[in-house]
Length: 343
Image (cartoon, rainbow, N blue to C red; front, side):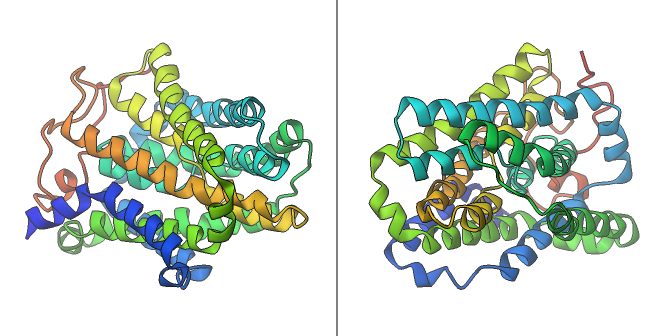
């Protein structure tokens, strides 16, 4: 049973891709999963990750503020400039150019935490970077979008804060409490937690595509190429920047995932509310949700099979089967002290 769960989890890219294709063929199959269902789905994912963490994990991460700052700075430097450059080079039409820039200016999405979880990257660091970039987005997203897209995007900071608390902070804290208070429950839940994450992320991506299916069908190859280049560039440049700054492979992978994956759902909402005269602005955001999940989950599958060889990752270096134990089944997010000191 454990091996079946592992196999299904490792097929993450396939489920996300099938969901996206299915949404293009028959949107109604997935559009029922929206609004509050998405919020609660993400909350469940974050609860599952919180269960795998301990207070000591966060203490160790907080001892590496430079890594957190690097990830957040890269998020709001690499992606917006990439989005603007790609829109200019490919001569995207106005609505698509604004949408691409808008999603590139959004913070890291909670899906990056899931991919880090599946990739055996530093989940605690990923969660912290996502939280920090989300709070920073209250200022950075409208400022960068106005600067690069020529339009001001108002952000309801209080609503964004409440959403972040609901789907990230509260579930993680609850998971931490359960980790320490109910170890038997943790051992029972961990074998299925990664697969639940996969199912929810696939549903979210398919739902967003289903809601934007008509504009996606009309957009053609140019828009698909633009979104692909945005996320592929984000993953690659994020990893390169971390390498140039001297981080070990374990941290490089975490920063790469954080930079390459955006909060596309936020981009869709901001596009619909702030550019009603350009309804196609939301289309790049919808495509982004699937592209970054497919690329990210593909990398997760590769990295699960290729542990870092520089000693930067915690033991065990070989992938344990889901359910072998709390910390092991939590994708080895445990002790990092001394393994990857900040340069």
